Amino acid sequence: MPSTLATKPQRDSMRKKVDAHVSKSMKCIDVSTKEPLSSATQMYHATSLERITMIREGLPGDTLLILSKNMGISKEELISLLDFSRATVNRRTKDNKPLPSTYSERIIGLQKLIGQVEIMVVESGDSTDFNAARWLADWLYRPTPALNGLQPSYFMDTNEGIGMLSSTLAKMQSGAYA
Image (cartoon, rainbow, N blue to C red):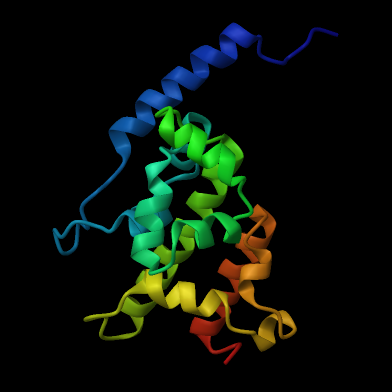
């Protein structure tokens, strides 16, 4: 029986085509309001292919500094929250190299959570002066009944945990968890 798996050159060729499509298709403007979308909302609305491309390429190390400032926490707190090696982050940032894909995936997961909160607030009413990144940073450290009294931060070290937190936020919006 012939193998149907793509060879490495075929996979590389497919990946280049996908990457080219993704770089052209990232939307940065809300079509309904013509306003720029926040990077977190962009990440939330990005397609899986777009996020996979960013994960594979690796995010720049300074993404952590920007994200920590937006959340109102230190870079060290963010590194600890996401269970990253401080030495790896500092070395990659100093050498101007992208972060490893596992790190990039968790950062993107966190950005998606912030984007989800931004959208929830906009859909629910007045979002004036609301800072989703800071709200999420605060929520991550509050014991939550929906998580058996655990802090949501406990689950930020895995993609499965980040997905569970996304589901919890959606249930909070619908009123399933108060």
